[in-house]
Image 1 (cartoon, helix red, strand yellow):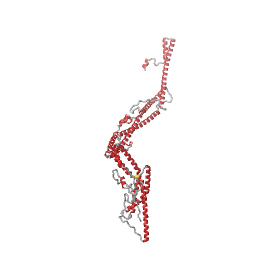
Image 2 (cartoon, helix red, strand yellow):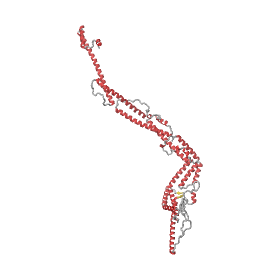
Image 3 (cartoon, rainbow, N blue to C red):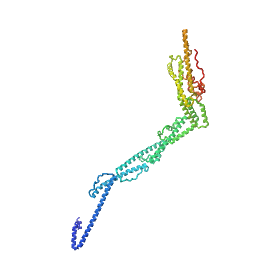
Image 4 (cartoon, rainbow, N blue to C red):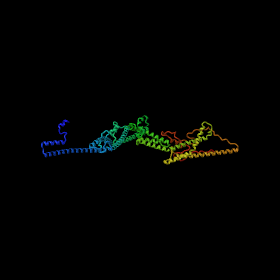
Length: 584
């Protein structure tokens, strides 16, 4: 500092001391007053110019500081508005102090708000990027592994409220994405199960819908677009329809196999080879879940077997047709409907030998006949059951009459108590016969009204049989009444003779072997019914031959004494010797 003062002799001197020195110099030089005034005026002007420049610089600096302060306040207001910060710690409440002090007070607040803005912009950018990505995945414009461009953030509104709205939107989209992903996984699982049952390649089926649906990709990487969901739904629907059609086809083949096996008496071992086909014959679509159960090769295998059995069936047509004819004859026999089995068999032979009818058509026609026969037999079942009861009651009635005629029925013989119990039950059953016959007649007439034909039993009209039975029952009752009157007349005569001669003749006992009352199977000679509904042995033999031409001894026979009716004249009565009361 001392060196500087030595080098600059003017340093430390004032304008007054310098002006005094200048006056001294002028005095020494002898400058005129005019020169002196001129030089003083010049000094004043130069000094004024220096002050002006300094003032202008100071004013410019102040203006810049004011502008900076204004810009800082405007930026502060903008940041607070964008961030929606109504109150912020550190903001000066009133303008106090110098401009530089005000700028120094605002600077840290601006710095903090800028940092907060940068963080808020990053949050907005992240949320909008996730929203944009999920929207792209849903629309199908973006794959799950693709990166999205950084979205433009509106920095005019960086409020927490706006950010919360974006977060809420993102949450809804994430929920929708989760639901869509769950649907995709369910569809993929269904496709996998259907492909397994149908024997199809799951990988090719799934990747045909979208490449991301294969098993190698992660769950979050699978496509959830509208197009993918739509195509998955169509694929599942198509596979289900295919499954339905294949199951229907397989069930038809299984039914054909079983029918053919039954027709040709196929062995159980051979049938077991196709258990995988017949096991689903009555299953619903949802119940078929075994892998490969509806594969095309399995269906083709069943088709080949059906075709083979069809060809075998054509070679065994006569045997099969006669088997169906035997089934038809058995139905008619149980229903007591008379047919001509020999003519039917001759007709079958003629049709097969002529070749005019397809084997399948012939069997289908016979199946129709069997179905109609079953329906007719079912319509007759109620009446036939009552006929059976009526015939059983008639048998008991016949046994009871034999029992009542046995004079030794009350003796203490072996089995007498059993016969006594049977007689009590038989009397109850016999008393129900009239009501049973009336109910049977009513049912027969109702059946004939519905069907428009007469109800026959082994070729004989059943109503005529019942009328004949009623007439003969009435005649038997009249005969019993005549016998009671005759007995009463004999007793009266005996009483008169006793009064005249004083003694009563003892009744004569019939000479003969002792009659034992036992169980009866087909009625007796007193006129009770046997289980055969026809006129005589010749008629019965003609109508009870089996399909083999042999006499069927096991078919039920009708009451001989009650229904003595021929087919040609069902309404006429049978001529015969009526019982004549003995002469007194």
